[in-house]
Image (cartoon, rainbow, N blue to C red; front, side):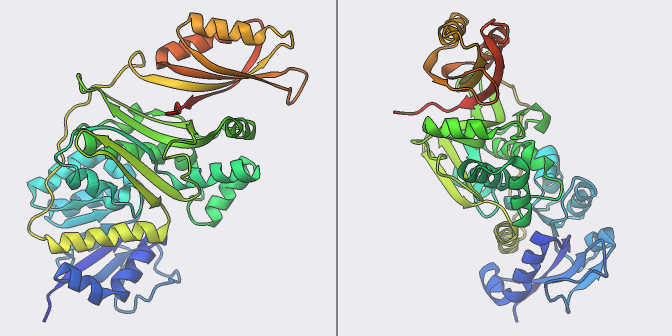
Length: 430
């Protein structure tokens, strides 16, 4: 008779329900793949009276999450409750008891991953977190194991489904920000409070985790150069589209070859048509990893939602069961050295509201180039709201600090009424 392994789950929301349904409905398949049958024994929930969409007749529901963690019949603790606390404390408690933990909690892993990995190692426990980045895309496994012989140079990614859905709908259908948020919520991708998504925190957490695994350094989420999509306007989605670009919330990480210093940023970015991220729309995610041996590795597919995330969670349960007694080693972790804004080069897209004198383009271009920002293209556009015309400028690569200082000076130029938009841009390879 095949042995069993007790599973205790913290949380039974969208992801938790999908995980429970898979563990209960496909126990034979999972047992065959794991070599031991994972049995969902207990689930901790806040409201015991709530009606559930999954058949839990043989599963004990409890409101005591700590008792679930301490239960000797629970071998693997699956944390899908979300939030930082009490999730982090419960994960720590489980690891201290030598139990395997599988979590989808990107905030906890981004903030405390190295400490938790060290705790797991010191107690012979396992910490698995594939679901914390990219839903069902095996990004963690790729960085943690498959590229173990490579020196990773950089990561470019779209890892937040909510903002990708929103930007796609805003660009293709001209819907307003509020309407796009509501659609993402209706489809189950955005929370009731979408701030973590639209303000770039969700993507920043995931970028911190990827960089930790890729570079062996842990950057605090607050140190990520982060800007969300609240200020992205329909006008700029349309204009960048006319110029052959698509605006995405791009999570970018890079490591300097000589110094090893790193830079992490999450910003709305104009992506050119010849770039692999250009056609990544709606709920899809994509990650591009650049390394010395494998060169360029691209993962893409559904990056969020209950089913996709549940796929990663249950996969970790199977992997943990299969390798029980031999947990994954703690990822290398060193103190990061951050690249300064004088060393990080970016290109840009600018939309200016200017005087109708006919001299604005020449004056703006001259001023930017005099201050070290090359201008690769300029386009005059008619007024939108009011009498003043617009000027679109594409700027070439220059240090972030040089760009910022040039914009401060540009804002004082008499012919410039307003800098309506300043956005990062990836330069076309053509």
